Image (cartoon, rainbow over all chains, first blue to last red):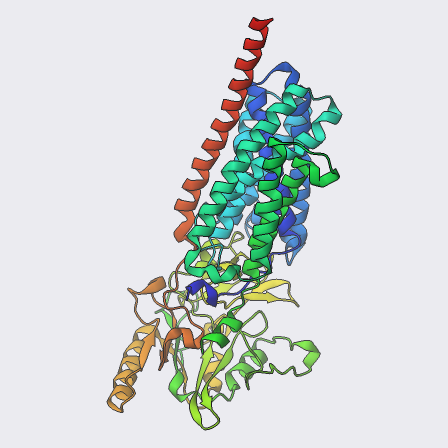
Length: 285
Length: 278
């Protein structure tokens, strides 16, 4: 039996699940804006502006979600400064939450600067921080002793790919309202398709890695992973890109990618949260 | 029973102190739980109304933010008259290499001069990273304070030369408190004694300074596999995956960057071809 089964759940649920989802989109959007800022056309400007807005508001919402999730929300600043020696900084490079707090703050700052007046330097810096924001959440889960999360080193990579695909899907949905050209949207869709394929490969590797504890998927979360994340959130959008068909949200590949991205975070967090050490101990005895 | 000399100033580093819990003499009276709750002024649960677990005589069920001591009842019965009770007073292990201390982003978790691990409630902001990092499921949120809490090994009592409330209250000396080196010698002798009496399964858990987590400053004498007591066989630090997970994420980020650039290049080529065809 995995040693991780004897640990307690941190109860990261209804604020953290949307944070992981929105943080991934915000990070991925800034990266896409940076790629277009450096190597795109002048006609990509509406997409870049939309991406900066998504990144900024995503960072704001992420900060709010993280703060209200704390047991003591007014002490959020203890993550950044030493409470006993203010204004000395609080930073632990080997604690993912510590460097995540700094990463999110710097990312939000870059997003604000980019929104006010973007340039290539800010875009490049923000793009790198965007990668960080989209991926560190997976690393954070891996650096625990909880089942599923700490049983595989692939969560950071998986969340990164999902962040990239959900960001592209968000921009496909929002950028046309800001005057994005057909050429820009076509590029976003083609990038999204590639990111989805990468996400599917990483998801397969992740699940295969968990083979020794495969019984964890014998729950409702296993079904949601298979049908919701893989079926509705990856395979179905890929089929729609290959052969478009009408039909509301179900016929909209980008909308389905967002549904899949949200369900991925939901499954990963709740499947582990459901495993309680006192129940496991009762089974072992 | 151990008394720390009052002459030693609390701020000066002392010998590592801790618990040795001999589960074979625990009678499940839960005096340690009561003493812990009493001394540390921990609140009752469910407004003081008793709630039965339904499948065990143990109704505390687990360690959490308001139960810093928990006497586990391990009811190994195959029939009404066949089986045995195992009892174990569980507590924070005060690991020499502590996962909670490693991940705490606020610096609220500290190592004291007694080599114990303490959460400073006035610094903790309740992010719960330590709960997921603890290999033993010891820590949880105290819903009154809103912060993560666990056993402090009665840091306040040790500071004035008193032994922790739980070991002081233990009527059978199942919980023994003292300098770790002394406790290890005592524990080893007890294992030999039990083996000589025919209990071949007697073993120590967490006593080895070269073992997992650098040894536990609260270690146990068990008479079955650790898993039976709800203890992991090979507890590890949460940071064991940090480098590998980080490296895989960086590699994936680079791959995503290449995917984006390949797409941009392809679009340019197609546009060039379009212009040339016109």
